Image (tube, rainbow, N blue to C red):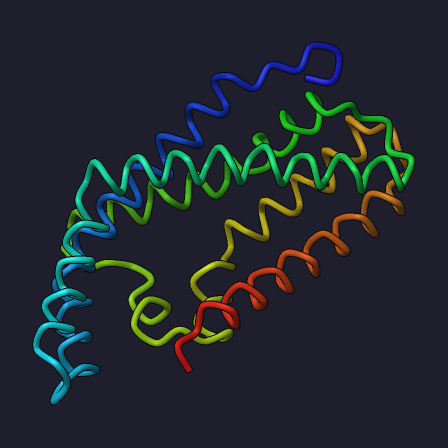
Length: 198
C-alpha cells in the first residue's frame, strides 16, 4: 500500500457501510424522534410541532439519508486525511496525501465491521443503536455511541500503519496515535457542545 496506494475499493466499502447503517438507523429512529418531539413541544404551537415532524420525515427518507451520508463520507474521509497529512508533515512522517487517504481508509475498516454488526443487530431486533445520543445529546452519550472496541482497534491499526507505512519509529508512531485519539475525542466533544439544545 505504501508503494502503490489504491483507495477506490476501500472508499466504496466505507461508503456502503456508512450509508446502509445510516439509512437503517434513521428509519428505526424516526417514530422515536417524533414521540420525543411531541413531548418537548407539548403545549406549544401545533404548527411548530407539525413542521418539526415534517422535517423529521424528510430528513429520514432513505434517499435523502443515503445521499447526505455519502456526502458526509466524502467530506470526512478526504478532509480528515488532509488534516492527518498536515500533522504527518509537521511530525516528519514520510507519507504523501494519497498514502494518507489509503492509511485512513485501511484503519477505518474496523469501524465498517462494527457497522455491519450493528446493522445485523438492528435488522434482527428492530431497535436503533445510538438512541441515547439522539434523544439526550450530551458529551457522555456522544462519546459512548462513538467510541467502542472497534474504535480502539482502529487506533491500534493507525499506530501500526504510521510505523510501517510512514517508516518512523515505534515511539513516534505511538505518540502520534495518542495525540490523534485525544484530538478525535476533543472534536467529538466540541461538535456535541455546538449541537446540544441545552
